[in-house]
Image (cartoon, rainbow, N blue to C red; front, top):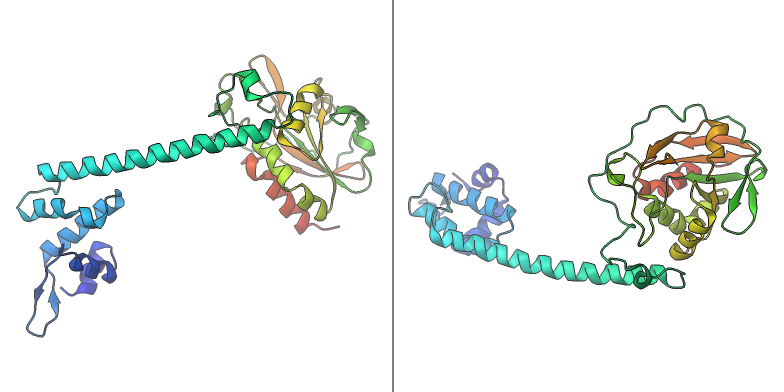
Length: 318
């Protein structure tokens, strides 16, 4: 077969085939006209190289596996030299993992130092494990489903309700002004040295309050430029607790505290219970002139939610 046919059947490029030949891994026969003539054995070797490369074994180190096949074995790893090749690849990967782990630990340490700079709470005070990082999210978090619990909110008037804010004053929700105000509502923020409720990561939509807050922090000026007059976070946590979060994460906006979940009662907002606590489900309200203009629910992933709000503001200019 010609090189193009070999490459097609093996799932590689013709350039890759020529590279394998340059290393002496493939030695096709030559026709009378000088063209390469590949057979089924060449195809088998090429597929073996591709399979080993997908495992992270460099092409240059596939020779023992190919020689094992050439010796008549059914599999390229039936020979002792092939097993040694696996061990070498594993050892190299282990060294890389150890190096990356050390770099990650250093980055997390710098993150925690920066996050606590100027804060009343320090990792040393709390005995914090520097590898505990509430700013990142596990890859397998359960996705919350839309149960319709916020469908009634658009068009509703905001109740006459005053909530304590981290700035020291009370904020009246029905007097936020004629412009747009973004209020993102969340269950609770994790805090270094303080355990989250049991099974927190398994509750759809629970994990991610700190990354969400950091997203609104990082996009705060963009949100204002896109038409938001203000941004607030809101949870049932105490103002003192929220104040530490604002300070530690360097948030440029205030947090509102609603420990009695008064807003939930007034607007029938969705909540959930865990570890003896009743907490807000994550959602965001766009309030304009005392009326809920839009509600985002469910919110996922929380670390990208500020981007979603920003996109909506830009797509719906005043």
